[in-house]
Image 1 (tube, rainbow, N blue to C red):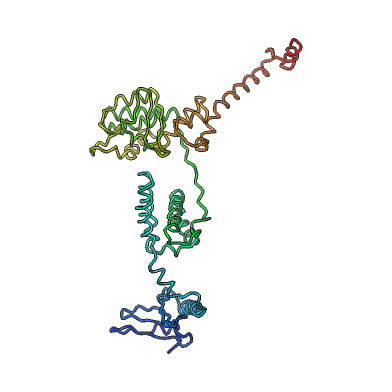
Image 2 (spheres, rainbow, N blue to C red):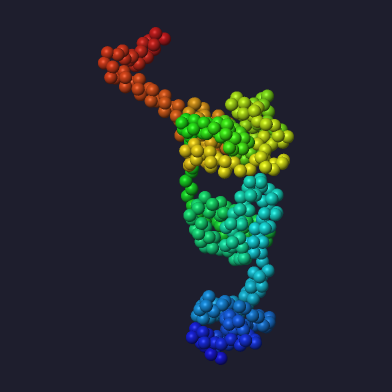
Length: 406
């Protein structure tokens, strides 16, 4: 026996035929296992309260130091001697528990695919494949602590929106892990992990920018350089304020031209009605009629169009509006509605919002008519004050006269 110091361990030579064990002279049961490959691992042997011989691997030399390994071994021995917890049983339980990769697979199969909409299923799988499994997949579900999750969330700080969406997904997964018996109740490690602030992206097209888009769409249509279905889709988005998925997944069975409505069987907010203006109706009347889809794929049979993002990138570059997203067409529809004096209730109905709080983002736009009226009043008063000879009505005197006559 020898004291397991770093110098002693570094000088140990492996046996090419078998494992070699070196036991520490100061802590009973603490030792070093040297594999023929040269790998050196700290181990601990002891007897539990039932006098059964138990064995635990503490860690690899180089990854941890002898002092850290000895300290861990001392803690494990103390647990074993107290008799309440057998460290080896804890190890065996962890070995048999679910990994994050297994939890992710179960989540997609038994939760997302059953309860969520196609776009949400796609987003969840994307976040799992890109972020969760590569960084967490091999670890056990029950091992994760709040500091682990906070560190992981911080590692995604360069993309705060995605980081917050991944955190929300993880929280749902850990909640389900509790339901499925993989973690104790109330142990979700995502709780109280602060989300990153997100700057709302609200871009509204000006009249000049709308004019440029219209001109670009017409030119591309004449040139036939972009799919006609993509141009039709973008025009419908502009004139309806609908979401991209609502137009691309639109079926002719949901179109009611006689009453000027789109009766969507499903959307982000469930079944929904979209009101059609004459411009949108004219577009729909001119579209080549596919048996099922209003915006059919130009490459695959019996499928809706896929690829609008790439078409939009080329269109916005040609129209010189590189910062405008497809979703900003929806914002711009609301902006025009507000500018024409429509209140938040009407705007919410047109956009299909189910909650008034969602429409509240357009409150500053809906104030425009009030600001305009206020400005006109101010100009009239200013003109009266500066006109010199203009007749100024004494409202107080007139009110008194009307009161006397009454």
